[in-house]
Length: 142
Image (tube, rainbow, N blue to C red):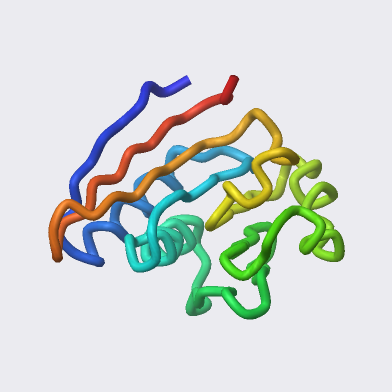
């Protein structure tokens, strides 16, 4: 298990580079939960993560459709849901039960009760207009 990491990024490109770097550390599948306010850098980070995974397609936020799939990488955005009942048709439990799938979830606090304990949590915070504080917690959550 890699220890917690705190990083400050000063641009969207730096946030994407951090996502690319994390992708290099991932082996197989898993769940990445991204927490933070609107516009704090979650989707930007996921774009870098996807690039680091070798995904060539343009990665867009799935805010209105809730999920986009790129091979065995799933980008989920739960901003518009109220609770876990709103996602029953997505089949998330089947997706995250496959150890080869990697799922990045924006707004995971909306389904906290059903999330697997083993996951990576990433928190995005504004420090000023151009800078973000990003805290990465690798490993299981107790």
